[in-house]
Amino acid sequence: MTQTDELGHGLPVAVAELWAPGSVVVARGHDDEGHETIAIWHVSPQGAPTGAWIETRQSYRSSAETARRLTTLLERRAITAPGEDEIDAVVGELTTAAGLAETGWWRRQVFAPSGVFEEIARRRQSIEDVVENARAERKNVAALDWPRELPDVMPRDVEGVRTLAGIGKGPGASAGAQAITVARVLRWLVQLWTETEQVKNRRSYVRDALGEPEALPPSWLAAVRTASAKVLPL
Image (cartoon, rainbow, N blue to C red):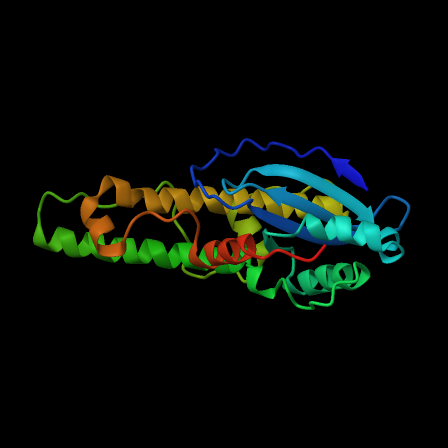
């Protein structure tokens, strides 16, 4: 197994504090010699990359020990990927190679970056509605001034979110490059969510209407919470 150094990309670190280990990105690709590989990228609750591994497909298909070691890197973490089909393909194959009888154990701890972006947009709209209602009742309520505007048309996949955010792709076309790209998108999403939820701290009437600030968007947070309680017999 190859453990790789992760890269910092200059994005501000958000302040989402969670008790769970965090999330993981899985991706498929090929190495320079044409071998099929998978990449596993750990991401902290704050959206920062914390660890990365790349392994050939042949190595874990031929060794239950290697497959189990890779599967432990997914355990107790919310899971995402460049494409939703990649999660079932990669994690399903690892589960089988590791000799685990429990198929589909990961499905309730999966989340999609495009769905997370849509949840952020909906939360912003809810906040805007509360602020506009307050402005209609009181003249001293200031209008919202978001650091960045969101589009009316939602991106349909992680590539759409990446393009919208103006985030560069990881270098090359390998599994590691794809995982780096998704990890960058996740960090940007955490930053965007934090910008949104911080309005609750600055405006008590928004907090009263919508509740306390949450660490992550709903589907991502639900995946983290589900994953944190899932222990595999490895």
